Length: 57
Image 1: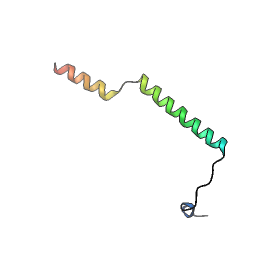
Image 2: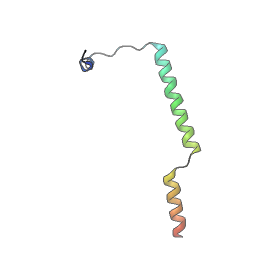
Image 3: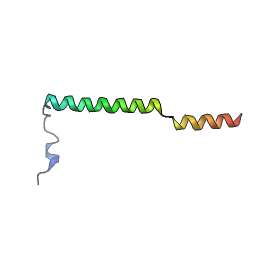
Image 4: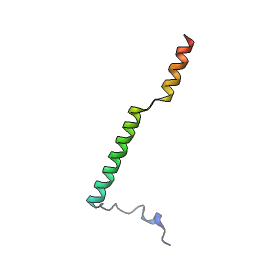
């Protein structure tokens, strides 16, 4: 079996454009889903903090 760590110091190779486009599209989709999840979900820390502050009053 070849040691994969021997290739660490080798110069980087160019990625095919179609693979690069697919990866960038996947990253953009993941970022969009994360933004949508943040938009439509509650920040539990803020909810707990506001409940505690409202009980103190």
